[in-house]
Image (cartoon, rainbow, N blue to C red; front, side, top):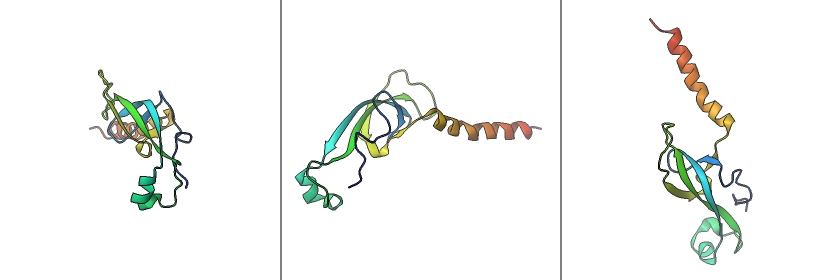
Length: 112
């Protein structure tokens, strides 16, 4: 079973991520989770799993920037399954900025 685990996330505690909730978040905790007999019995997705196998960890984080890129003064904590999380790298930020730079150039070129 090829599964996201705490060992192959691509990010760690202290890293900045996007997650299930809007905004940009600092990772506070990564909690491994393990397949239980109840999961195997109850959910078909786990029918071929082995009891005790690790599956997608729970990520606890705090918002540091909101979705409008404003720094949050009083960070609120939240959490979600690791499958909803992605590392924010400088390269990813550059990719996010590029369309805005293109728009700015277009507006400047089309001023009256």
